[in-house]
Length: 367
Image (tube, rainbow, N blue to C red; front, side, top):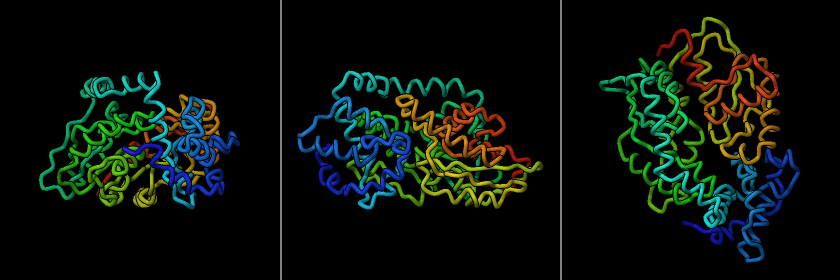
């Protein structure tokens, strides 16, 4: 496991060009250089040289980050921003009372059993899995925590892929580990990652996730695990990718207008327009800043509610200007963030839905 000291060379690569400022949703609001990657790098570089100590104040600025990854996209030095921040967060949190409390709540026994209880309670509402003989496609389904709790996604998947000859393998995966990583609980993250990697040692055509953040986290396992655990990007997709690949068609009897919010961790959204080509009576209207952060970002909204409130309201304004009937996304957390923003802005006519929910409600579905 790398320590912050091991990133000293990486921190030195920062040229202080300020391009991260132009992309950071937090800096746009606060205009505070300590809240953007450049400023945090200066502080953390001071820590690696022994001039500063990791403190509550530095930790506050580490938490002032949506993990959207825009700073890395714009960084000419391609610095692994989130990995550095996660490591610093771990080194600070592992020695605090707050860190011990979070560690206890996120322990395998507590966290997994809470999810398990909700899974058991929702089981009567989940559809019976379809038995597929000689399937054309076999997928390994990594179900995110939200959809383990909520049975509706299984209903949508069953309806959409009913005649698509897709066999779904669903092992007992744990949480992808992103919440642990963001809280500085590195040991728990590695524990979850190792467990999940073992369950991926089966034959499949695609590893499918129902959450952009889960997919991004899974693909990043190799950065944190010492073993050879590379997940092939060509095999890792979301349900939207698979729908596009299978060429499933959808007919809506009543014309509808839709817009799309691209989650920060969704690397490729080309599937969406491919799906739209196979949708009858659906008009797409692109919103301004369709790929900008919704502001929720897991625990970020709890720790920085004022910032989340501002980001989500700005996002809601962009959505409202489209005049769409639906705003579609592929991330459960984004759905919550967008719903809050529309509610706070008193926009009630536009419904926030997952891609699967929207497509499953088509009047006709056929391959």
